[in-house]
Image (cartoon, rainbow over all chains, first blue to last red):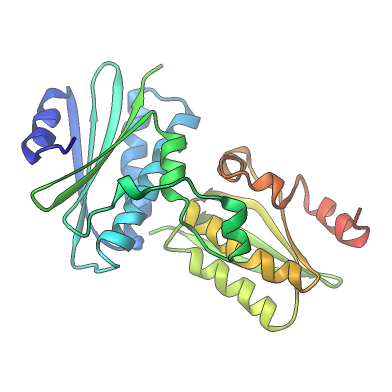
Amino acid sequence: MPLRNSQIHLDLVKSTNTQNLSVPASTAYLSAVRDFVGTYASDFGFKDSDIDAIRLAVDEACTNVIKHAYDYDDTRHVMVYVGMNNSQFWVSIVDQGKAFDYEMYTEPDIKERIKLKKRGGVGVYLIRQLMDEVIYSHADGQNEIRMIKQKL
Amino acid sequence: MSSFSVTHKQIEHLDVLELNGELDAHTAAQLEESLQNLLNKNKHHIIVNCTRLEYISSAGLGVFMAYIEDVRGLGGDIKLTNMNPRVYNVFDLLGFPTLYDIMDDESDAVAQFANPS
């Protein structure tokens, strides 16, 4: 079900702690985004393997936005929201570019992709492997991918 | 910005690429250029030493996906070595260990090229 914009902000308010970062839609900023979410994931108390998973999932989501939603137009911006409460940690990547058709998504056959010499196309698969829950939404020209990791 | 570099060394007829730093969508082009340079020189017995590779995303994995068929088609291979467990975990999530030779140490890859089993 699509999330309204107002819901994005409502959820931010409901979390006990939220942070955000806006970066130009350029791969040059990926490491800054990884470090941004990594710092908060670490403060949240996740173990190293969970922090690595969150950093990678967020990198993949941002790379997809830069590449597919914005077609490498670095005058556009990618918004990164980090929120946490007692039980979970989440990162939302919000853009105003082309929407990702998540209903058309199918799991990639890596062996087949190698045979066809295709690079990539596995980011969404990785995100789903790395995070506990992934929610896509689109409303009023804004796309959001929200990636959630539970505290164990 | 991600810091990444590739250094090249030769062990007899084998080419070793040593990766340093973080391999993501920003830096993957550097790895691609290094591999392409080797292929342009008709070199396809390649070891990629990951000792100093600290991070990899699917953009980095994609470079290996794009080149392995060509390299094997020419009778060569790309063997990956010395990965730290965090980097190995990303390869593992995508099932790479069954599709690529991933070895503990560079010397294992050298031996494997010398005596393919």
